[in-house]
Length: 200
Image 1 (cartoon, rainbow, N blue to C red):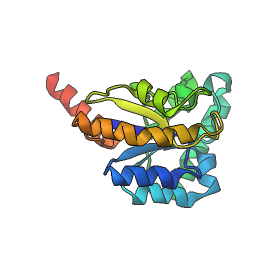
Image 2: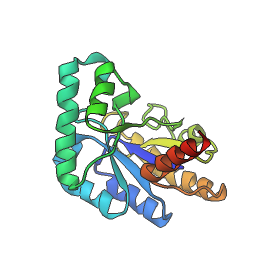
Image 3: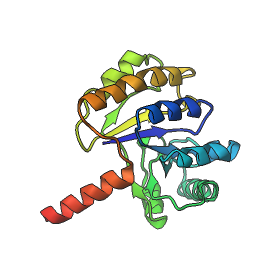
Image 4: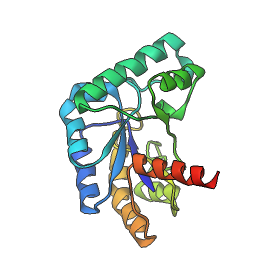
């Protein structure tokens, strides 16, 4: 199954990477271009620790309320900033708030991105989020699940990131109890494609 984090990389990144490292867990970080532009070294740290990068746009704005031209400009700007800092191509895209417009969908195709959402949402950005609620919302994952968490509270409720950090060790322990291994989206989705192809 896959752990994914949206909205960073931000100031708390080091704490998230430390927890993931202690658990020998791997994750995919859907990063924002404006966050990367603030400190490109944080992106390099994610990659150095063996994790994976996905694109979350340049600014965190709902694509359902943006013009096609603005969406196209945002996505292309994100790609340029993120890939320049990462020194590698990106494969995955997740729009802010998980909202695709037709323009978003088509531009993702033009960039060669695979569109990714999630199967379990922690709701860790909510104003009422607590470590317990984050764990409860994740529940008991199964193989193939994609978990949504956030490593920044810049676009959610201020301070909500702390609830995520406190919940993460419990979630990782639960995954170990279930004998579920975290893997990068690249591995999870490639495996799923191969299984679907063999079944067909």
